[in-house]
Length: 222
Image (cartoon, one colour):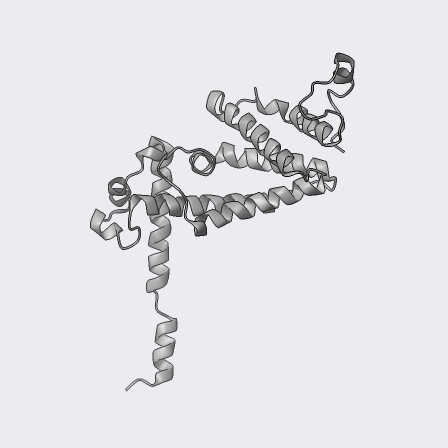
């Protein structure tokens, strides 16, 4: 008869949780492959099950619904973005570090289109991430906001302005000229304009005179 200790060792060595996790990761990888080929709206439980060699009823042991699948994909995408941002190299200068954060985001968007669409666009109108999944996105936002505050961008309205400008710039690029730089080449210019506004060189709601505009067209990011 096995002792209590031997039962514990057998439980500790149970391979089933690892196998289940591996299958779960395989399911998510299949969903991303389908999204890359057919778009996020083309992801279906039937196609995912077929891709990983499961019957659809068996898939429910891992993913209970299509919404749950999107939620798991959102969590994975947000976690990967956060890890990507934290692993990027940042300049010592606070404002150049903000520029670096934009380049890190751009690199992620370029190399992960379906993940970026799920994170930043309402490609799936009825989908809302769960609080647990959205927490990763909030961590990424907090990481970015800390960089902005270090660079002197502390007003919530100015932070919203940064998000809108950079998001719009990158979205225009990916939507209209993926792989090009028609919009992203203006990154330094829009950051310079933002910092000029933050420094009071461009008061809110006003346009500088032509001579001032010439003088502040390319202020230093330092």
